[in-house]
Image (cartoon, rainbow, N blue to C red):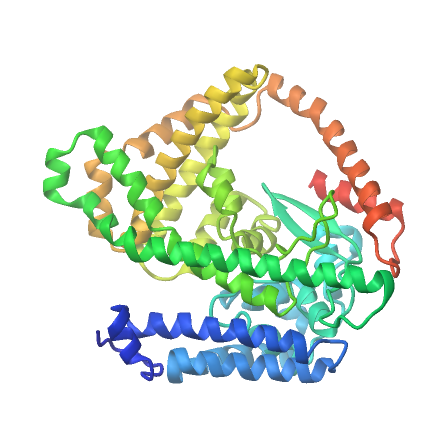
Length: 505
């Protein structure tokens, strides 16, 4: 199966055998190579054995090699882009770089804002998450290239904060870890990277062995998900093409329930390729020792610091927001940190527009994200105004959740069709065949319901919030007492304060 590629054609025979384009085969093989390299990197170049300089050099060179293998001379884009951006930071000055950096990539814009927050804004003007991520000194060129071009994330990411990456490379304890659970950021303190050495004695040996086992389990579980996702994509996805939704015969003969059911299953079948790519990327980072986020309340290690999706929450989302919060998580965090939190007006609209621009030039992206604005605002208005009527009785809430799950899956599928079809004509063909029904319904919802929470809903929310805050404080105290490390430099009071402030934002 010959196809044009600027990358290596060494794997063309394998491409022909599996009947996949050679560029896709190159990507998968390079990611599997990166997984093996990550295990080697963690075992033989662990921070306890090797200097940060060597780790930066090896991570960067391996990353550039993988990019060269996959993309050929197009890999120069990574070097040129990073080089120009670094030149701007050094020559023009970091105080002027946070605006022009918005047009480049996630990592560069993230670092731009983190440096701006750390060096040119007052602490009291920052949100808790901005304060945690703020960078207080200029990175060296090697650190900068390593962050942008390391082999663990050069092909499929995921995005991570600069401080998290440097902390991992230097082998320091993880002081401030961020996670996203339904839009809420949390903070963790002083979690150390599990060492690959098993030569310690006593209790330390037991703890270290347990951590090593947790790495193996986390990577194995994610590789299993990758295998199932790839199998699903290779078998089911090809039998349910999204393009069939605009087939003339299908539109003319199928009933509305059949058409909406096929819309749902065809879009659901299109997701496993993303599950495969993002979960494999996460596994590679975990295998290298990156992605450790401390312990849950039961003392179980967590390896989801830079995870990009939560499949169960995606497939069983009961709101548009819940779906977005669990899909492409690191990009959602990036949009929140560089746009939503900093926008002076209409943050939702600005964030969707930025997301569309970042994705590329295909018109389908803009149709999807503009539709997404309507869906998000309408879903927010419905949820804020009526949800509190259905949560008091468990039976009623179950029925409400089932209805909202069905509505969410229909809305998501309807919204992302142009994202898959890419072009204007097929996208409008699909929407016109549905009579723009959900567009019209969203507009009517916004005309009928206010966007702000009703008084009754606000009071219920206010009464629940302090209880949830107290639970988090109790959890943080228990976790600190049982699972804190010996080099903890933060007090219990500081931890509770940071957690509570992060929740309030």
